[in-house]
Image 1 (cartoon, helix red, strand yellow):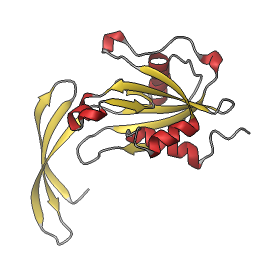
Image 2 (cartoon, one colour):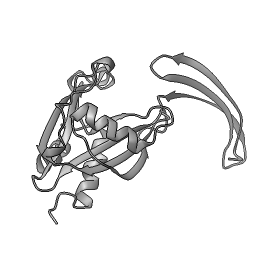
Image 3 (cartoon, one colour):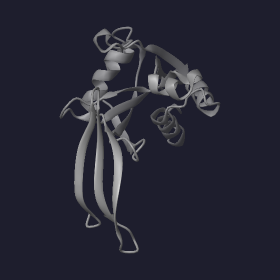
Length: 195
């Protein structure tokens, strides 16, 4: 990018993730250069998945407490979402999501199909989400799920009719962007229409 120069980075916080202050010179369309300062939250990339069962007409969702949602609105701390997780180091997104499916919802799936990549908040967060779909059957369930105690996870696994999931999205019971994107992807591509 030839409209960008003199980039400096200062770490403001380095806890669970890293909060950076990034200062840079940016050339605007009128030709002028201005010094700009932004904060950028780096928590790595993530993967998420919509598990669907055509025969039963169901999807697997999770429900868990999310402190940032609670901090924004005390009535929205419990979040209904698709299964998701952070990608470890140089792990492939598909490897990550297959591991997360077993940990969080208790299903062992053989593969997942990537359908989208998206930044959910590119003005503040570096995270890119890799969005997957995969069919599941009852025989793939190997445990109850619920997440890892070592990661302080307490995840409720929800198998719901797809029509109910769409209803929950439409009435704002589901507010999570990655979940909305995957439910809409399933709608557009008729994933739950039996062949």
